[in-house]
Image 1: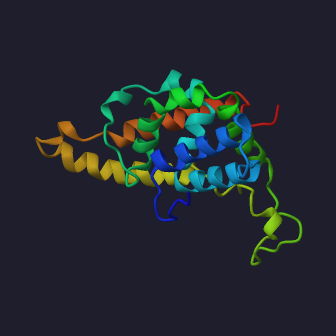
Image 2: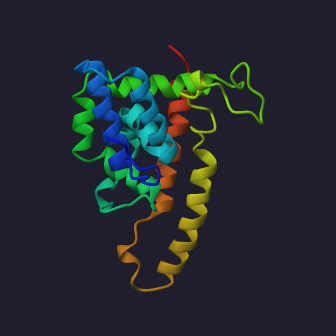
Length: 196
């Protein structure tokens, strides 16, 4: 089935990616290919990069993230919270129970981060050849600037709610962003974003 380009929900994007991965790599069904699975992964990452890192390095995030059960009903308008909720839901069991799935996400991330130059045969203003469009760019995997924006917006919301007595129900995005940042710093310091 075709997914609409406008739906950025991690629940749809990452679940569809896992289904295609299973269809291609586990069940080896006709019509499912590595390219079709990777195309869905790319679209999922472009929709929500936090979820990709969280899945790829789940054990590291589990050691850092706290209070994840406070997040309930996050939407694509709340990308960090949505990624955290997805990666701490029953969906994680499906990813963990699928041989090689989380490692596949990790290897695609690492490979893309190692590619600092545009693909051969392209210029900054040209479309890459069709054979090269199934690759992630380092900009697809950029998380820090997006996180800083979320932190700034979250700080504004925090100030609003903490100046109001009804702020107890608001999810503390700044706290979760800080834990996400700490996890990523630990992953980088451990050299986990480098090829093995």
